[in-house]
Each structure stands twice: as C-alpha cells, then as structure tokens.
Image (cartoon, rainbow, N blue to C red; front, side, top):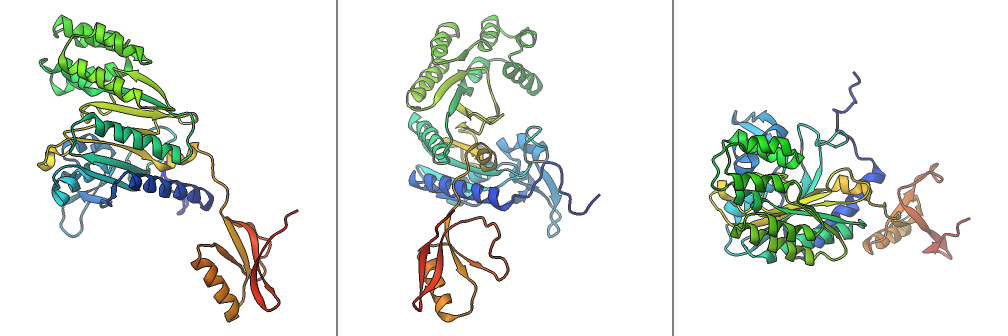
Amino acid sequence: MSAWLLPDHIADVLPSEARHIEEIRRDLLDMARRYGYELVIPPLFEHLESLLSGAGEMLDLQTFKLVDQLSGRMLGLRADSTPQVARIDAHLLNRRGVTRLCYCGPVLHARPGSPQACREPLQFGAELYGHTGLEADLEILSLTLDVLRVAQLESIGVDMGDAGIVQALLKDVVLNASERRQLHSALVAKDANEIKALCRNIPTVIARALQDLVQLYGDVRILDDALRILPALPEIRQALTQLKTLAQHLHGATVSFDLADLPGYAYYSGARFSIYAPGASTALARGGRYDEVGAVFGRRRPAVGFSLDIKSLAAVVARRPLRAAIRAPWSEAPELRQAIAVLRHQGETVVCVLPGHENEVEEFDCDRALRLVDGQWVVQKLIRD
C-alpha cells in the first residue's frame, strides 16, 4: 500500500474547493454574529467520560478513542461539538439568563454517516440556552435558514416534528431501553407490523396512536389530522400548536411534517427540524430543542440549536466567482515592493508573477496589472481577448 493513500472516507481539500468552503464558513460565522451569537472553540479531544456523558452516549460508536500519554486516561476525538458547548455553558460560563453560542470546527467520525459521506465533517452550529419559550425555537430556525441563504442555497425544504409527542404517549408506559429503541426504529421506518408487534403489551389507546403516527406526514393539514386522531393529551396539543406557529414563520421554504420521524430520539425534547435541498441525499442541517443536554453537567436548563456540515453544504451550492486580483511583476525594487504593500494594506489581492511562470493558471481572477508608467507604479485594467 502506498504511504500517501488516505484512510477510507478521508480526503484532502484542494485549493479551489478549500476556497469555496472557506468563503461559506466566513459568511456563516458572520451571520451568526449578526444574531448576537458568540464564538467558542471547544478542544478537538477530551476525556472520554466527559465527551460521552449524557446525550453524548449515543456518539460512542462514532467516537475515535485513544490513550493520553500524559495521564494514561482514555480520550475521545469529538464526533459532535454540541455536548462540548453544553459543558462550556454549564461550567465555564455559568451565566444567568440567555446565552447564545456558535462554533465551527472539524469533527471526526469512526464510521461514515452514508456511503458517500466524509468522516471528517466541518461542523458549524449555534446554541441558544436559557429560554423556554417558542421565541428561542423560532430564532434558531430563522438563523438556520439565514445561514443557508447566505451560502446561496436555493429551494430549501424544512421537515418538522416534535419528540414530545411520542414522549407524551409513552410517559406512563413501562418499556426497557431495548424495547424503546426498537419502537423508535419502527416508527422511523414506518413499519406498521413491527409497531403492532411491539405494542402488544401497551394500552390499546396508546398502541393505536403509535400506529397512527406512521400515517401522519405531509403538509400543514397533517397537524389538524393529528389533533383529531391522537389522544387529547395537553403535551400533544401544545406540540402540534407550536409546530403550526413555527411553520407560519418559515417564509420562502417548503414546509412538511413527519410526526413519526425521530432522529436522535434520546436527544431532542421538543420541536425538531431537518433541512433538505436539491442535490443533497441527506439532510443538510438538523436542529431543535434539547432541554436535557446540560443536565449531565449539573445544569439542566432550556436549550435549542442546530448544526450542519459545511463540506456537505459546499457540495450543493454554486461556487462563487474567483476573487478579483492584481498581477504584479517580481522585483526587489523598493518602489515596487512599497506599491504592492500599499495595495495589500487596502485589502487588494496582489499576485506576484515569479520569473518563468507568467502564463500559469491561478486561483484568482487577475483582472488588473501593476505596471510602471512614467516612473510610477500604477494599477491598470487588463484587456481580455
């Protein structure tokens, strides 16, 4: 095997793609800042017991593990930054009231999420802590749509649900962890026969409602159907009402609902959403309410957020035009070096052409040139064929 071959589902990012990804990353972070979100940078690895605490337990199979050569303790390379940000909110900041945090950095997956997925996503996300009201859910949804739009994503589709509906149905039902996992898997797969089999020891009303859930997907009219079909539990009525309210604010996006779709069922505690777009085989962004995320760190408080992989996003949005630049000859003449320094200080990109490489392709659109005219270095527009 060649020494330069990379592991499966790991790839270098070459200049053109890297430029595209970096332009998106900057725009996303700028948009989060416009909403008032503060940037945090969690470490790439932590002690394993901290990294996989609470909601992080479901990431166990996705987490690379290694031994710390300093302490001998087990470490984990982060597979998701959200638990780390919850730890920062709970222990390092420990603020009262609302805290808005965002982050952007690589995560590492022991297994690819899909046959074509990269195992080193560049995860961007935002978290809002400290507010129980629907206003927080709406802000996160609005921010998610805005970061996707600033990345120039078109034809956005938002699929919504609420983990609280199934939680309300099962709150008085005794199921072990394995049975609960099987039931959630059957709901996601919309396997009516499996649901019926798993519900044989569940009260008839609840069993019927769980079977009805697999048919409750579609446009906003599904919410009215659910109000009529599902048991009149306060938690269910509240969840359906809130979903309708959120949907009314999602202008410019196609909105659908799937009340049996429960990604991260052990993670979300309320409304959740997944965002799709043409060209993407899986959801480009996922988010929702997860009020228990900080409980394992000793601080249970409201939380809502979202995350996405910038690399996956970059793959489905059009690349932007090359940045305009100025070509300059190579010389050690002080006047030329000073002219180049002034232009760069003004924010211009100046590419010095090294001797013998005048006709090479560049990663910039050199539409101007720095030329010596009457003893002065001036910028002139290039005339193209």
